[in-house]
Length: 458
Image (cartoon, rainbow, N blue to C red; front, side, top):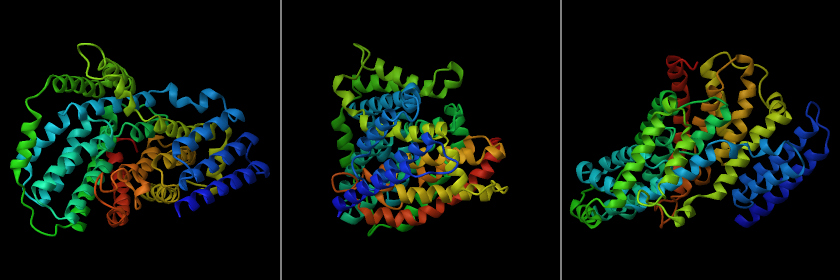
């Protein structure tokens, strides 16, 4: 069935591209029409999983260059910004925090002190995710590290198979909203939202505007999990096994101490970016590169294998859709065709409208990055007449897509945990939370209107 879907998506994408390429579209330039054809083809390929998004994204970028849709420097503009290098550095730092045992040590110590029941397990997952989001600036390695620790909790509490799946799902579900709190909580999509808005925003600026809404999103997610996924029996934790695991780690080793110092330095640089003027991406890259130097370093050549080149190509294509779409007039044309002529004057309706459209696109495309790459530039055109800060539509789209999912493939942070060898849970757990979580998304964007009025962005 999956293969059939791939083939249908392939031919449908090609057909759509050929039709749009060859018809006359009033109000759209020739280059804009070609951009629309290639962009829709690529989006269809992403939505139907014709091939890995890295491959289809690479094809899209090459075709933009070959057909001279836009200058090459604009197509690959992402690589002249700090985003790519932030992702590289974040993965290297995250890998060091995991391989050194530092993150695991912190988690075990936390569990011994604070976990005593099923509810405390759920609370602790969210709190640990929050703490480690400062140390490990990407949700995937962070979630897998936390999962490896809670496997010990699951065994020590002798949990049933179903309760174990609930715990595993919580680990990966928690990473979605908690990653929204800090700019470096998810070093890919958070930075991407800022990049697409065209507004400079430092680490504390993000925390100021998004921190409280993201905390609300995290609390709502946690409450839904506690309500929907109750334990089959009372949970009792045997902390002897956890203490034994901590003893196995031994005393704090040299690599852990070095890693801790480098992470502290990175966090200080992130928090003080408005003072020293170095963008977060470059600061992260510098720290990661220095972590490989003799005597002071903890990284080696093998650590480069952790950097996902396919994700970077995907990011490049998602950014290119918005950037090239703006240059060729595609974004303006789409906005004029599918969006209302006037911006809703009521800000709450405006926020709900953007959230609804973003969720609709997310249901169709199934890609947070893909939707952001299309919707943020689209709504920025839409809101020009209202003289709104570009961050407003960008962060509304970001909130709606970064928090939303119903099916696993709609959020990679959840998808990576599916299965016995990962987070233990299955598609049913995702859907059970995802449906009511959609309503929580609307509550958060409504809250953002009030919060941003207080903070001055609205």
